[in-house]
Image (cartoon, rainbow, N blue to C red; front, top):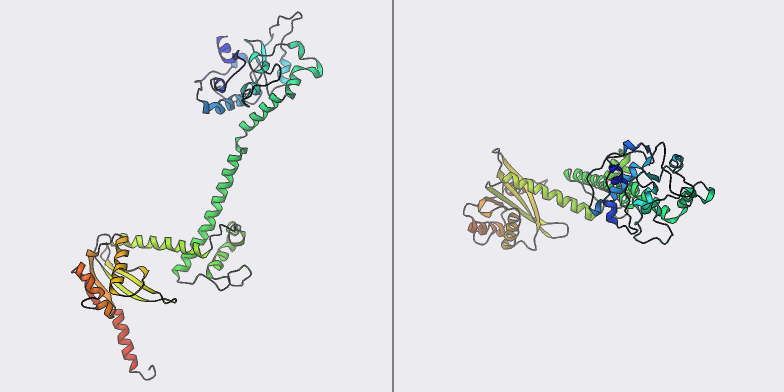
Length: 404
């Protein structure tokens, strides 16, 4: 009986705070809502919960257990002029909320008890604490037809608010926060699939040195360019991809714009340069430089690194291309040193220079090779054999009448 008293005792104060709920003992197991149990099956207590942010877990545990509905042979009689007692049939009539305390010989409402302070405002309804703290014992007011106190309790606003709070607590999967999380995860999955198709298309076109853009990239065009046409081809073999790319993609996240293409190519080029840098390690290397004008007449300089890898093989890697404002030796040297220092390549490790025969490159006093020799005496200059071959072919072709 002491266990019963400690488990079912209601606080006598009319004003309960939220901490009262968190101090209730938790049942050890879950049962179907509204199950009738025997007195000897009363749930055992576990460690009391006193942390405020665990209030919902405590309430959820009691709701999963359901109201305590004790089925005994003889309920005690009250002390009225015409004594009456609690009826077990009432538990079957109201299985979802009605519970009975043997110690107090009183009926309580589980949802109202758990959420009596849910609105943080005292209820103005007379007797609103009967089913929460005082307990209902007026058995003569039950079997009176439509004036039954239990039926009246079902229609009061505190009960309806408590039931709604119970439903919201148990239906956490329907919470707006969880719905946003589900939608967000689906959106992330679609965005990644859409982006992966753009990355694969860019990688394939870059590897084959193909142009990206088309003259007319509108949806009505018969040829929208290699990039968009390749994405369309990939989508034709994957229904899931077809639902999220091109016209089926959101306007602000298609991942097909020219800016996105350049950003992806920049990331790829950075990874390639990082791989080349790892190949070089702390080894010595040579630089091969050439400059020319692009279509817009902007001067650009190509940088090629020649080195011996860890396996002892000679490697030549195109490393970077840099736009320069002019082709003077000082400007070219600053641009080259900037690229090397950006990737932690020491100028003192240069062991060779390969340029064309222009005066700004091979000049003995102020040429590019002379400037590097001042910083590294072992950076010997060699006239580029590719340029030598080109000069030889041009000179030889001049002697052929048909070619000239």
